Length: 70
Image (cartoon, rainbow, N blue to C red):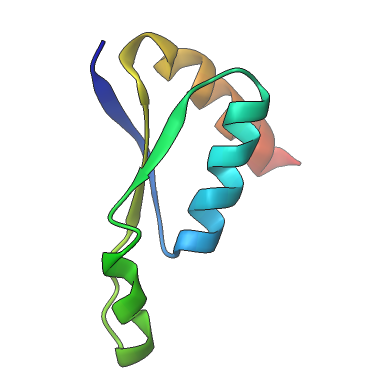
């Protein structure tokens, strides 16, 4: 079971919202680099990576498309 990147988001709040929605749908997800994103107040943009298990990637991508459309 390996983690793969689902998406990169510009801030930790968006990433955590998405992670919560994925978890509610039964897809384990974690956010990487959220601690690095705190530098955004000084003009640095370090995206937060939302990671899922490789076997959940297809379902997570489908849910991500739904979230974007909604």
